[in-house]
Length: 231
Image 1 (cartoon, one colour):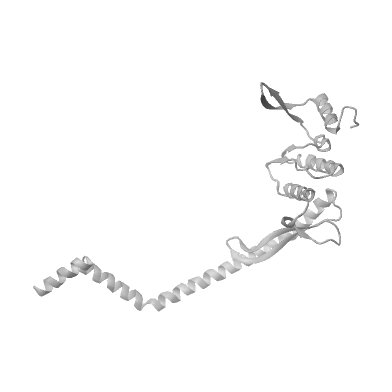
Image 2: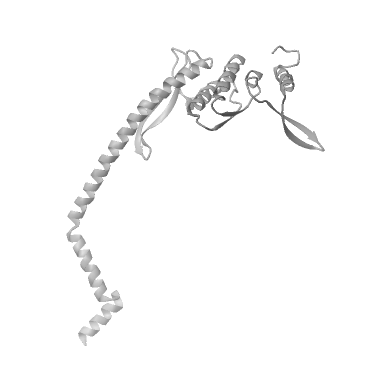
């Protein structure tokens, strides 16, 4: 009766005493083999670290090579956009390891020889940003449509002509839609769409018109400042 009473109290406290006994036995066994388990875990962690280190090193080497190649190409392109003395460099800054590797990339620009190279997020001009963005776009374009909304902002007339020429060459490989206020850029387009607004019954409407050759010439003259301007 005492044994039955003890079993009954154990059941009330722990549930099925035999299942509890089995569970406790397994926990004791796990604790007794804890050192072996820790050794196994540490070994797996070390193997994972070595594998990750190798992958990170491989990625860093690939990035270094790609950064050098991209720096050369960007420098060449930005010099062709009326910045003959500029140099673009992709810097790789060492950082704490993340899921994307051991470094962070920065684009730096030296506008002219002898000047300090600065990172673009630190304060390059609007015209320099336009050139860099355009140069990057021309390099990464593959079978896609590019939409440039006043990519030629903050640049001069001569540079706008260079932008137009580059857009025309790029347009031979991919579709480009460019919104511009520069006739120097618009005249290189294969198709010219005029966007204009009108007001009717106190409502403003935006219309897009496809221009024929005669209308195109008239619009380019208007963009230059008047129909008496010389194309």
